[in-house]
Amino acid sequence: MLLIKTKDYQQMCERAAEIIIEKVNAAAPLKLGLATGGTPKGIYRKLIEDHRNNGTSYQRVTTFNLDEYVGLPPHHPNSYHFYMNHYLFSHIDIPEKQTHIPDGMASDLEAECSRYERLIDTEGGIDLQILGIGLNGHIGFNEPGTSFLSRTHVVQLDETTRRANKRYFSSFAEVPTHAITMGIATIMKSSEIILLVNGRKKAKVLRRLFEEEVNEQLPASVLKKHPHVTIIADEEALSSLY
Ligand code: F6R
Image (cartoon, rainbow, N blue to C red; front, side, top):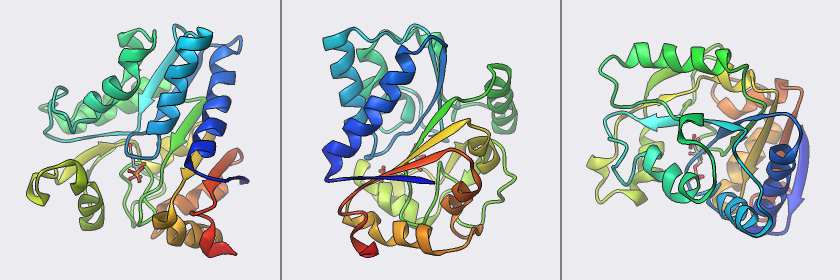
């Protein structure tokens, strides 16, 4: 794992955006895995800024999001469909049909998981996957204890994850209890992965990531087995390590 240390959140986002933009501008079409949550918002702002100022085009980019809540329709302000349109897709020139997010409203959720996994494979796999990390070490919505062999599946969300995401809802009871997520094996199939970690709140889990052996109680630890992972972390997130 390569570690890029940045001064703060802004610098972390700039560094990640630079890497993405370089790949978007490369000769080959790009399949990009995307995350939601607080962490990548600043990166999406940078991508939009660059699209406006430098004309970087997303016509040859296909995206796959990591996850979506079960039971929230795409127009619900807390759905990840809404998030992606709001924070990125509606501001760049990516064709809608090239943006993929699991359908948390599907009547047959198991069939939706298989469809999503197959779609990633038939499109040739993800070239670059962007990841955030949960306070409990989750990646995507793969909570501690999830098998490293897991493919796209329905998960019951951990209490800590629901509490961490409560800030977006008016009450804890409204936070969905289930989600569809790419599995750990799905994430590990990506050719390259960038893990973003910022803020003092993430210092403890980042320290665990560096100190612990690969184990299923710390889902992100699996990334140590991937040949091409870059962690971009700011000083606050790295503060427990020094
Ligand atoms: C989001 C996702 C999650 C988040 C993680 C960190 O699509 O899959 O794993 O990356 O929960 O969330 P934030 O960035 O809000 O701290």
